Image (cartoon, rainbow over all chains, first blue to last red; front, side, top):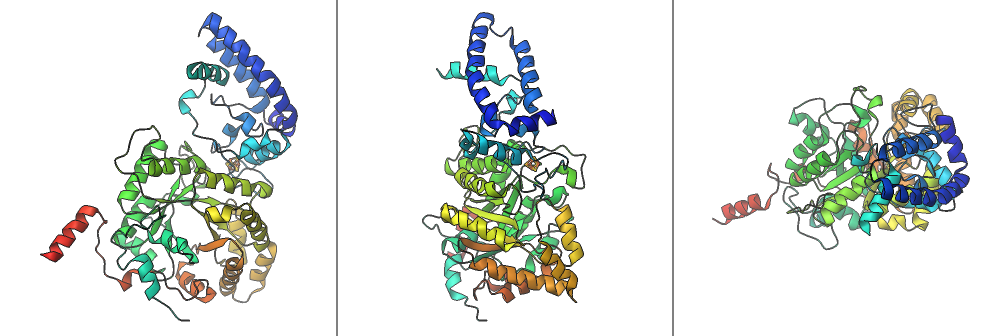
Length: 150
Length: 357
Ligand code: SF4
């Protein structure tokens, strides 16, 4: 939801601390769940993630979540899906070149990042989005990648 | 004004149709990079690609800049309108000795197509590439097209750096020969979020951009603030920054530009000046010349990117009158003799053999 998304970015500092507190918990739970149930609960987990993050951030389930590096503004809402924005077309009022009624996702992102403790993460270059992960759960992707790395 | 031809012939070679000798610390074999690294103030411009398959039309459009610019940008479906491709324009230009900058936008192609085109461009003798996000399809003449945006401008820079520096594709698969391209990107200091644009410039340079061309500058004060920060952060030393500008035809067209071209910012006093002028077109060129002269004086600026949309025929006189080249005359095809051929080692060896026979 657009309104909720703007609200979340405005409270990026709060959302960040919430995220920092809950993310490890979620990931631990996920690790436990997948250990016991394997892949059988992937679908419901994905639905839950899509519901929660969809409500708060208009999450597009790219499966490659970078919210904490983008001021809590989901870059997949940018019509050009830019992961290192903004583009050069931002309007004078800070709205999007493509959708004039929407605040530029990246104006919001830099704004949100400036209020966050770890906001400097936005200055790092984000690498290529992995399109093969589209529609999958980033929670599950993170724990499985971690497990693969170890 | 005096024109000194000789020093630059040493710098750029007598026959730009041939590959230039390797110079240390240079990444390409092109003239544009040499001019910048030699500390010359550079001027670039852009060609409006024709809606035509006629190569002569490309040459006609390039010709009007002869002897006035160091490189010519070949736009890639700018404004999301369909035209002759930037690859096609570049191929025609390099065959005729010109030094084009191929623009690659992320709108129309995914990483597979782009990487193929990067190799293609380098094989055609293109030495410079400009990485852009691209205007959205909704603003162009095919709003029903599917936008791609697989990469963004920064990941595109990284892609080409990977291909050039590591001689491999993004997949890690090895290239037999990497593309020797001088890599650039764009920045728009004149659109929000103003205070963060400088960090975005830093990101582009971190990703590997070696030169930068900006959006139209009509507001010197914003530019000065931006450049002061760029100098303070050492960014103007890490990449060559060229500032975009251009002549406005009238108050009406300035307003149109401001309204319809994303990210173009024109301050009201400039529009008032055009509106009050007896000959607005002439006034527009005067404003452009003044802007160019002011831009050149700003610390950290290494060149100007002149976008003379629909006023290309005046570009040369604007550049000459502004004096930004300080009497230097960039290479022009009529000065030299060249072969209508893509320079390849094999072709060159054959030519040498023929000569020595
Ligand atoms: S203006 Fe902002 S949201 Fe719109 S396309 Fe550009 S970066 Fe994306």
